[in-house]
Image (cartoon, rainbow, N blue to C red; front, top):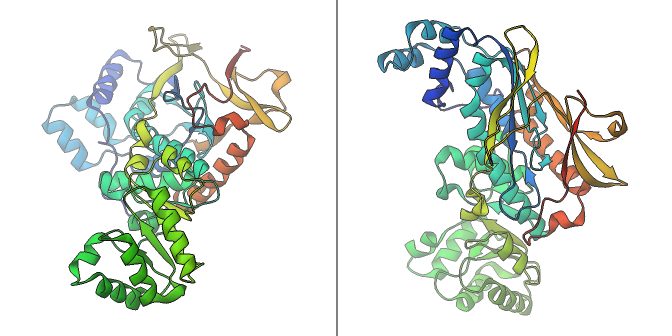
Length: 441
């Protein structure tokens, strides 16, 4: 984490007002220090999706040590009278000392999967709700979309080009999540620096337009960046631009990019022309508002790679994973643990401590098995899904920074390989495997 340079020292005010008013009220009622368990889960997947991808966990762990209330934060809370002096005094000494466990980042998940479990006092744990959900909801949405896109692309690489369509910090998070979900590179340099991601990019239409002619623009780009560069063909006329590109760079031209029109037809015409000119090794990249469906529609086209922007950073129609953070168990007034759950219609929760595992039929996953509070003996051979992320307030840094991203990439690849073939279909359908609860307590 030493190479991460945050925009702010403290992350404590990246939260909602009511987290602190709940804290004040529980300090007064005497329930603030009850041991409690909060759980992050999704009641359902976005409509028609067959699986989701956990992402954002590493970012939560990176922000957790900085969730402290310093002079600036306390002064703001005092000036605005958000909480009283007793609560401010308590916040001044705040440090998360509990435990966090959950699905490893990159893991696939299904409705009801206990993605993150926070165990601490009520006061310590409730303050983390907004921070946890803001990271997991956005990153999970992007990683889930990226996974669908990269699966549709097959062996052809996908690059994140969505920075200009998102908040500047969301763009970094999106790049990280996209790589976890299967993308191979990003245009975002800050994401490249923080997480050691591969960055890419050459030129936009403005580069061509600033020159007097397209020929001058192409010549300048090749001179500056070499023959292996990628030339953008559709500022004016694609066919004329392609002829000019090969005249300047020769058949050693690295690649061309198409950003408008009927991409399948244009790619076929460009490939035929490139081959006729002897540029058989020149690659074709396509961009222009791509999503998983457009990528799947280009499977038969002679395309070598994809650049994806808007649809990626907005979750391809599902901009949030709709994850929630709910209290599922707490210490009672008698000191004994009690399961608690929400019963509201359509917004219920399942109380209790939980363990989760993926059950298999041969080598193929067939069930998301959740034991409450533990898995039954007949499921012992299933693959456990939950790992320790924070123990006694200490973060496992192996899940953060560049190492955390690499680890999450591997986890995602392995998890996808376990799923049934139906999981890879883009058509609307039910979750690829069912979720089953096993009450054993």
